[in-house]
Image (tube, rainbow, N blue to C red; front, side):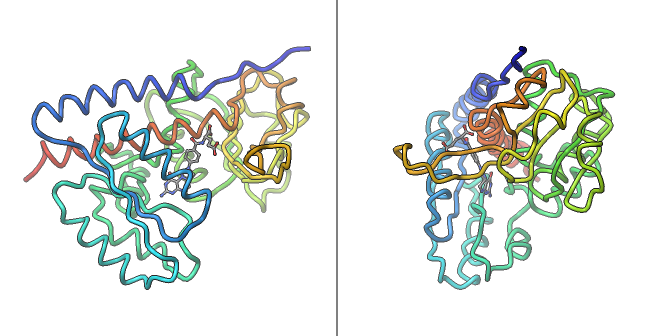
Length: 298
Ligand SMILES: Nc1nc(=O)c2c([nH]1)NC[C@@H]1CN(c3ccc(C(=O)N[C@@H](CCC(=O)O)C(=O)O)cc3)C=[N+]21
């Protein structure tokens, strides 16, 4: 009975954090303190936890941060005028609008109100366009970039690999497909994107060298759906009620760990895999933003 090797996110994230801290130090020696502003709308408990984790890590690295909290009854204009002020503030290099937003807000219009140079999430249409074009002057979305760097850290070669991505969302599936099919190292993959209208999902996943599961469906991917030795990246995360857990809930990924770990060669745990990498890429993007805004100023 074999057990998949776990590709832990923490060591890979720490390697990125160490480089980020060095870059922060160099900026600070020149009198620049890289800074990110987090915007949270409403009191969603998960968003509160995530923003706090990002603030704490930023502080550890010497990156300045502010968090602005708006009421979920605030008019969208309030958020738009806040973005306008932050967009012009030369002390602010990165702006993150924590998702999800209240359903009555127009997320597409809101991202467009960000200057693309401060869009460290990489969600602005300019950055999405640059991503598709392979123009490195944009920002890579944090979770897809984190997956690329996680695979690279553990020397999983994507060149020529058959990668099957489950999920076609704008945050993970679609941008990850664009990154992986790019020409170049840490890319060069043959990419298939599978979604709810795909005819035979197991047929696709069974021939993949690498399966990326980003559906948000707990324990969706089972061992009988993958090729022996495959690399499995578990991205989706769901909360299930668990009275035995002090938090009252437990996090569960898209992968059925019990069966998949019997068949897969390597597996990213969840939590403890892609999540920490997402934060590492966010803060690396923030330092990129500070460097670009400082050294490429026209
Ligand atoms: N504008 C925006 N940008 C985001 O990047 C963004 C967002 N909105 N909205 C929500 C999602 C979620 N997200 C996570 C980041 C880190 C972990 C993470 O580090 N998780 C830990 C566990 C955390 C726990 O125990 O709850 C882990 O996987 O080990 C998880 C989730 C960023 N998001």
